[in-house]
Image (cartoon, rainbow, N blue to C red):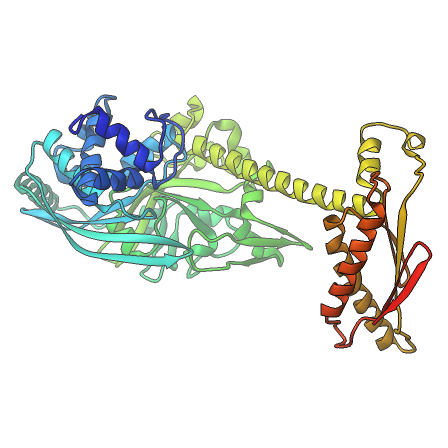
Length: 539
């Protein structure tokens, strides 16, 4: 260690952490690393930012021991290739770490001296960590000298706080730009005949064309067959929900920036119910919004529809890339449906010959390949049901507590517990030699009209609630309320020799509480209290 074992132990003590070993697949709070960095700042003379930067460098060294540096090298020949594929790397890692909340990164400007990187994350305080991580990857993996500076930082709050940071990365990018120029020159030298959109949509029967307003400008032939209504000029949000990339708002700008990233859209079969008079009401214009469909009198969410095994009614998961077509100023989503095996085709309302005529879609279906996205799909469904189960357990505990309160208000707690333990009702009967009983009557409330009755009811509720709040303080048990009379006792069901004192103290507390009580009608409470044979009037 750089500062020694003793300093590390002192840092852990300041941070309040006893354990030094972390489980690889266990989820920990986001602020652990920040707390350790703050503790390091207190114990040593270095700053918080320097330690967050140091942690980012250490993480690169850490994952290199597990061979993840090979994955980074495989993304491309150049550092810029890696930066363009960060989201795809996170997509790969989500299979092993399904609960990972990864940031999103994309490039806006690329030149021979470097590029501009946009970093978006729902986590706060990890900017210096990312800087250290990028420095170490550039040095260890691509043997580059990297200079990095922050151009601007934005924080937006839309349901949750998101941080957006623009970095300027300066490094030798001449090889990447040279390869890109050669690629562009080769494509320009190929004098190919123009292709009509109709032919393009035949080759990609599940493709979707969209304009700058995210309205559907065209769809593949299979969408025409499986959708019951015309999708043209409809908002994309009406028929599709974005699943990847995670954590971004689907917009024209983001689709342009993320052309190198795999997209996954879910075709909502619920949206096709409109033709039968059923309604689909999108709550927001966000692709991630949850929409509900009314079938008869019962609302059904797309998630429930997706889980159904009705043939031809399941949502279709599509994976592909966004590509900008300059000639027509549209973005096309070139995609293929993700299907586990041939048995799933009828549930989706598809046939084998509906799939793309090119690629390995048909071979994968026949071989019964299990798509990573399908596995995550199942994980999301299991996690959703787990959350629903947790909510139901919480509601069960709440209703159990309410049931206990209601039961204990009707019969003594000791009697109720004995009945719950299986004792017979006769065994709960007891005799008590001496008890003190108190009666309290609410007087002076005559009613002749409905308004008078409601006034009496609200007054009784306020007075008796005041009495109930004093019960536990004086070991007094509420027996019952009959009309405007409140009955309480001490010495039963729990025996005590101070029963008379308890009732007397309770009576005095009632007197004090009545004087301070303000009735809903604005008047004052008028009660009579009787204990044993002693009766006196209070006002």
